[in-house]
Image (cartoon, rainbow, N blue to C red; front, side):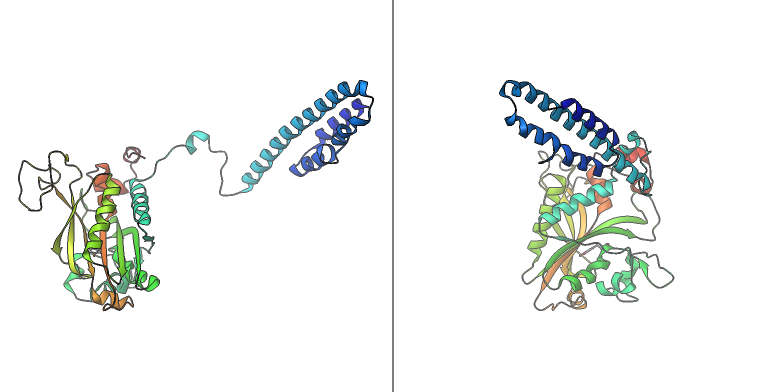
Length: 354
Ligand code: DAH
């Protein structure tokens, strides 16, 4: 058996490998099931027993070194092929140094939105995504705010030339959700909203909300209280209590403002009280010693709204709620200046725990 000859041949062939496909052909030719090296190993049984051990050792060595050379070449070739492919992709810039790729953090709104989505999804809510431009019907009529109704004055609106609006609230997607999912569903719709407002530390013309709806045959206010309490407890990782105060929103009847027990208060010193009595021994500065923080609007969906969504209000009921994600992010991360959110200020973005 002339091993020197085959070693030379293998070396020459290895030098010629240019593509991944060449490597596969080489593997088949020498190391595959009926490859030349494999056949030599199989032929060992026919050679003189006195030489078998030494020839066997040399053959094994040849097999091992050929495999090693081939695999390392193949990796290099694959890597090159991959980079060449990326070079031709207009969307990828592989010349950006590694250090820059690692920079950057998620925006607090992105973080809080995915947290809220996760919490509601775990309770069976569908996550919906509505458009930022809405028709007048979606934004107002469909949620029981007819033309010339004073409730329209509660939301300063950006109007487009074609009569559509930048949605003033995520409630603009309620009608669509009802038509899409029918009379029994639960869904949330987070997103950006716009109001033509004077800007200060707590008012922005661009902010984020999340809308929630649950409709079915036996839905009551208890369900609303339960889901809000569970969701807030999960988001704040702290036992949160909620209470409802009567309020007016045209799309719900009865309508409420929902308060959450203050997340900033030290639990051991402050038990939320059911009365509105302001006592300085309880609470903290943020909740103005009331132990409650106003959190969102909510209520039982108005029969007109259900009907406009194609749902029989005599058979089905539901609750709806809408809260500010921007406000939630401010509470969660202790941010007291709303203008920072849209400022593009890197120091602010880096300061939010990821
Ligand atoms: N759309 C209201 C707003 O932007 C918030 C809201 C209140 C949503 C009550 C609701 C609700 O679904 O039931 O001020």
